[in-house]
Length: 409
Ligand SMILES: C[S@@+](CC[C@H](N)C(=O)[O-])C[C@H]1O[C@@H](n2cnc3c(N)ncnc32)[C@H](O)[C@@H]1O
Ligand code: SF4
Image (cartoon, rainbow, N blue to C red; front, side):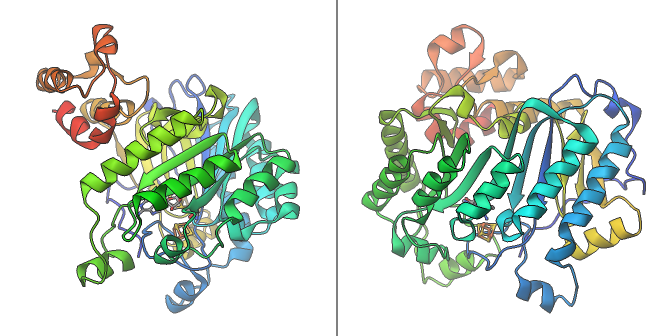
């Protein structure tokens, strides 16, 4: 089951924002995230805010996929009212899930058209959708491309059948690679493959084979995430019962090194700890917008937004979300104004994971002492440090979470 949302402060029923949040709107990059909370089946490791038809039926609610795009479009119109008529061309749009491609392609195109109609898209806007490899075909991809999508991200995870089975993934090995070819043929400029390493039962060789298969397909972007065992998932329960082994940190570190070696040799450069691209243009600009504290509106159940230091989040369940919009209320359920100190800490947390690193001037005295130690231990780059930035070395990327924890002190 998806994890719980924070409480936060109440949000006015029209969703209006304080003036200080709206100040400077349009001077910072602005993006749109659209959450699609449906999956055909739930993968045993995933605690994202997503629901299968069976889960929706058993909760006794009618939150139908058929009307989803209409609700979402109602929220896009609400966003325009809340943000006012300031010039706000959208730089990036990202449809994530769940499985956006479980909806008909025309719904994805309609949602994008509503964003374009209300806000306008920047001339070079990046428009991405996530897709499960088993849920698309050339006709579907063609409709998306014609409707304005220019980037697509496929959840490949692994090339090994036994790893896919353990993860409850239902595509056949080889299908994600074929998706890359199909997406390119339909004219998608940018294509990503998502991989997972550290699945119980995966060997180093399995991981190398997955990397080789992904690289061989020729996407211009690869994301590689270690498998997180989330509380409350089927995977966590199986590990707790002793049915599956817990994979230790050393294995994750070894797999990361294998990934870096294979990807770098094939011309992929890291630009965030878990993300590699063949060119600067191939980087995911939408994620960069999150990592650099820009403004974005997150539409859909459970989606988070951030505008000018105010963060808010929508009701999680698709039925509660639909109900709010049907009653002409904001679906936002809580919000918080980020204190300056929290914003500083957040900047360190996010920017330190980037290839450009974070300015040393962001660090408090204790954080600076920790940075000196990390430098002495070879976890931070000497040349970057001398020019005033904390940038992780390869060794530092292996221990990124620990380094970040120390530097935010
Ligand atoms: C939430 S999914 C949404 C897109 C699509 N449904 C898919 O699975 O590719 C986005 C990515 O998050 C990854 N993910 C979800 N739960 C994870 C976990 N516990 N550990 C690592 N990656 C995870 C998925 O494998 C997927 O590649
Ligand atoms: S398909 Fe993606 S979003 Fe759906 S359960 Fe699996 S990992 Fe989560």
